[in-house]
Length: 256
Image 1 (cartoon, helix red, strand yellow):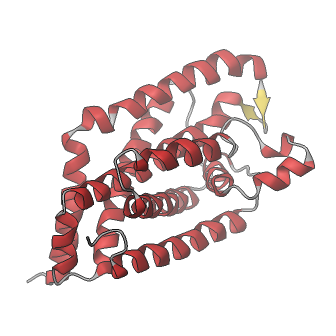
Image 2 (cartoon, helix red, strand yellow):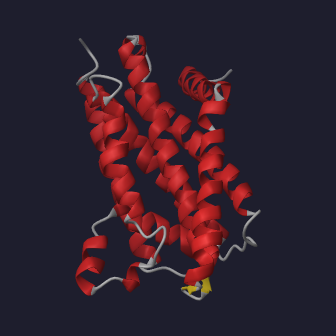
Image 3 (cartoon, one colour):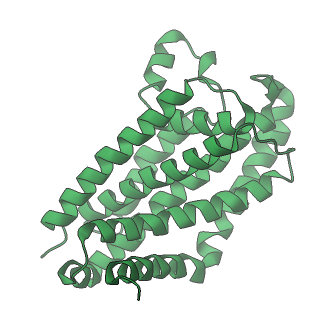
């Protein structure tokens, strides 16, 4: 017989997966369309004029960043919207009083966000196959980076949802924080092209490390060391999980 905690965890994960697959036209199709436009405009039209970057065609160079960009936004959005909806509808109170550890509640929502991030990442990768010849330099690094990045931003989405008071509040961070960090994170350029000062500033951007580690997995090139990238991701996971656990454990923003 399965352990009750395992049943609770898998039930929560299934609920989260069913939530975004049930409305797949809204959750899975738009990223595919958006990334197709990125590949057409930046890859084909602009890329043909830029030429090579880092020893690869511009299309090949931006492909890992575009995949990671979709993973980041969808992992974040899934948990932020789902957790806030549960809080808004008072469903979260039932979970908090149930004999389920808070760690499992957090892991269940994060696993749902990671699932959506991976689904969208797979879809965008299939789209990319129509534009570039896919090559993989280091598959373990790809998988580890993908999972760690999804976890980081899923945890960020949960923390955003805890503090959000209205549905508008869960769109503030993606619009004013995530989008600038992603576009300035080296998706469309190598930070080695920047002046020294701006290279230093870029190293304060956590997205730089996720995109470069992911690019290393595909192409074998990176503007920052792989160890540093994975270390930064691990540190963010530890800090964000600790913050999320404290917020849920104390019921901050959850109990009226």
